[in-house]
Amino acid sequence: MAFLSEALARVNPSPTVAITQRARELRAEGRDVIALSAGEPDFDTPENVKRAAVAAIGRGETKYTAPDGMTELKQAICDKFARENGLSYAPAQISVSSGGKQVLWNALLATLNPGDEVIVPAPYWVSYPDMVRMAGGTPVIVTGEERDGFRLTAGALEAAITPRTKWLIFNSPSNPTGAGYDRATLCALTNVLMRHPQVHVMSDDMYEHLAYDGFTFCTPAEVEPGLAERTLTVNGVSKAYAMTGWRIGYAGGPEPLIAAMRKVQSQTTTNPCSISQWAAVEALTGPQDVLATRAEAFRRRRDAVVAALNDCAGMTCQTPEGAFYVYPSVAGCLGRTSAGGARIETDEDFATALLEEAGVALVFGAAFGLSPHVRLSYAAADDVLADACNRIRAFCAGLT
Image 1 (tube, rainbow, N blue to C red):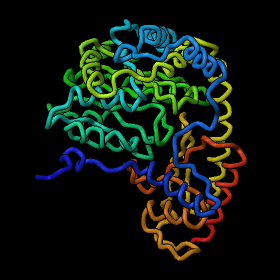
Image 2 (tube, one colour):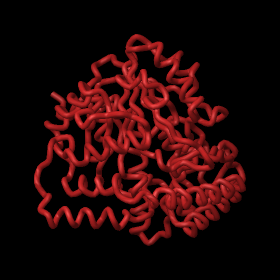
Image 3 (cartoon, one colour):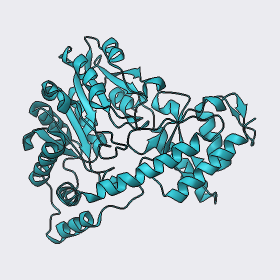
Image 4 (cartoon, rainbow, N blue to C red):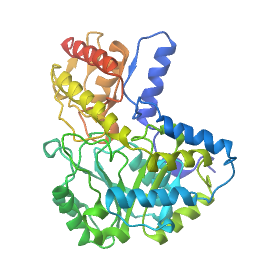
């Protein structure tokens, strides 16, 4: 009898975590390493949010809450959805978890049976396919080509749907590409979904507030209200409010699905941290000016990074609509040899040699389902990004 489960054998460790850990190890050895591999804002949590958490501790708000979130936070989330997305939810249609990842996992575990298919557009966040596999489902990878801005097309979505399709996982702006779907593009997808009533939509809106150059964010249930009863709209406070460590994600959806997710959570982690929940209430209901200020900083960084990478021999980089990632092609670097003697045949080879020789940690594109690319997170200080880009330029110039 095998000791470890078959479910665990279906998944792989997160490549982003592995690369970030390798960067830590090199730093511990005394190496000068710039890690642009993790998706974490470098800004601090807003002061009003931190004060709200301290006040909650002072009031003794340190007990269990309802399994999937306290009433005050659920109401704040309902108000947020109504105010910013035109979506109407009651508190019973809201689920709060310890991060957006747990929201997604709860939904998949609550709904997937062996043989169920989940459409995952590539490039994808590294956890989507493995969570589907661990929950017993089958990920169906559909590539958004670079010529289409890495976006899923209506034709490709239509061709991927089968009688076994249960979910589409949708992410805009995207991790890892930063690609955003405008209303017309998203409407083309929702028109397809309306013809297939067995398909549910898991919309990961975590980067909603990180949108640039007049790009207007929209979400599937907002664009097509007819999808509301089969859409789980997922969000959280991690990215927009720089609260990654607080671990609060949330979702709105049909009440039967939310109840099923509550059952899963009641037998796993139970409620998210009570202090973090009070901090999230303040984040969603307090002053929102920090969102625009930080989005402008990210836009400035994006523009500088895109220009610098397009100046690197063998690299080309599109300008994304949102998030804080770029996804440059390294096709022009393949088949060459680095100054340190490493043969560059794949994007993983490129990322490995870049880290070992130039001290810059990026994530290779194969981890996200589309090569030959790398993902760079520009959630770092301007001078750090400038240093990193200079190192990347020198590394590319040294390829022969």
